[in-house]
Amino acid sequence: MVSEETIRRLEKIALKMRLDILEMVGVGKAGHLGGSSSCADIVATLYFYKMRIDPDNPKSENRDRFLLSKGHGALAQYSALVELGYIPREEMKKTKTLEGILQGHPDMKKTPGIEANTGSLGQGLSIAVGMALGLRLDKKDSKVYVIVGDGELAEGQIWETIMCASYYKLDNLVAIVDNNRLQATGPIEERLNIFPIAPKWEAFGWYVREIDGHNIKEIVETLDELDNIYGKPKVIIAKTIKGKGFSFAENNPAFHNIQLTEEQYLQAKRELEEQMARWS
Amino acid sequence: MVAENLREAYGKTLVELGAIYKDIVVLDADLSKSTRTVLFQEAYPERFFEMSIAEQNMVSVAAGLALVGKIPFVHSFAVFATGRTYDQIRQSVCIAGLNVKICGSSCGLSDFGDGATHQSIEDVALMRVLPNMVVLVPADANETKKMVRAMVKHYGPMYIRINRNDLPVYTSEDGEYEIGKLYQLKDGEDITIFANGVMVSKAMNASEVLERKGIYTRVVNVSTVKPLEKEELLKYIKGVKGIIVAEEHSIIGGLGSTIVEQLSDVKHPPVKFIGIRDKFGTSASNYEELLAHYGLTSESIVDTAINLLDGG
Image (cartoon, rainbow over all chains, first blue to last red; front, side, top):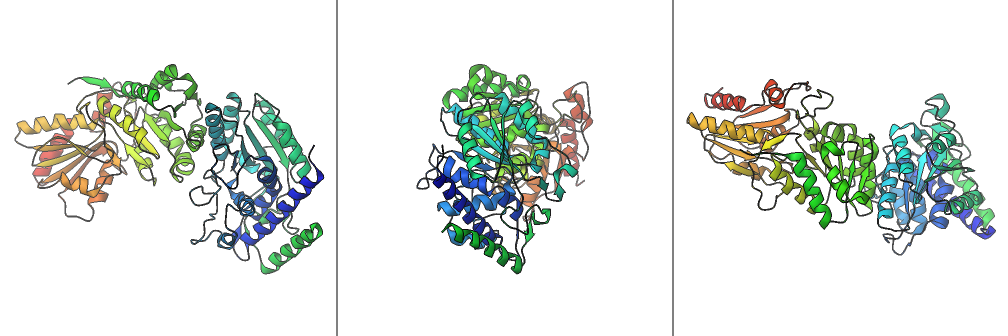
């Protein structure tokens, strides 16, 4: 049973991460605000609660791996890596510039803590499967966590991978679907409707759980529960809100990849800082 | 001339290397009997992964395996291994420079019966354009064996195209294959013939015919298409009156293009291309007939050489 204190700690980190995301998006620079903030609570829980990582030794062989198959959510991962100290804080303002180390999509060659190059949708889940297969071959007990977008499920490769992970019974693999229901140009069900998601993964042989992707307690408990499921890969369908934590952006596809006005930036900063003040 | 099968040589060498390098893993897309990775599967079943008819997943999975320290070799027919999976090779493998080896089997026109959908005449161009990628085209079974051994020692993405059929053996079994080195098989002062793959044997035949006509050709096996340094090429074109490049590939983006790119800023003799001229493949009843259909013969090389010396 996870303590209230742990939950509060994670909620505070997720809030800090949203402030970092805002810092990286800045004013007048395009940034994937919507899809980064929808998965921020999950990313926070993975890095600051669930995963076996050693900030003093980021390349430790026994670490758990985290991949963002929906690579455009990179700002969420960067914010966690900044809070962990893998990425210098001053890099945030240089996001997506020639001078900086934070690319538009995750780049393992340029950014400490990034495990693979992702961003071409549909591929990160496969890379995670490869890692899980290789780790099992070496009899290592590290786990692989990978966040997949719900829009990304339209990619054919995803379904090749879902079959593959199930065939190889990869119980060291946990996928989390960031189910914010919106893709770049609008609602998913008005494009290729991939809903309902859960029965599809279930039919392909995965252990499936559906949760509220912003309820840290539920994320924590579900991730812990999955440790005890053996013989098949596991997926969490996390219901989320695109733009979560940014009042004007929530559930608004216009904020998939946008430039914030100064007014929006200041409003978001004020709102997040007010919430932060309540924690202190 | 003894002819040996390149696929068989490839499969056996993987088995040989599998005993030495425990990190080698092999992935195939339901073609293991054809690519001959079935030999590796029989020897090391725990390190063989059947990825079924899902090539895109296969390549990205290989990237993941490389990221945890494995040396993955992925296999399909060349047309699928490079075309169907181009984005996976580019995004998952090459940008990060991962240690993934891609084997395109039944390359070129060598799968003569299956027609345009299964013949691969663009694979070298597709792989060559990718930063960090090494592109290898063995001429025969001996070179295949040496190349596969060299591939394990070289860290980074690599592509090797393997002919489906038995080819005459012109290269030596001894020594180690050096990536990026050109191998001269025969000397001559009139014309340099750069060739790779099946066209090496055609070039060697042509060279003999030309010699009887008093035309002396230097035959150079360019089995590494990338990296290919200008200095290496310059060594072999000194004093000749013409250059012929022969390849079982589209003339767009293949070996000929590579060579001319390298020579673009130096004075060099005229260059003639023997290759496929912006066409898809087609079914034929045998390999030689199909090669002849596209002009990939020693006769074409002979005619081109005579023509070159006539100033044509």
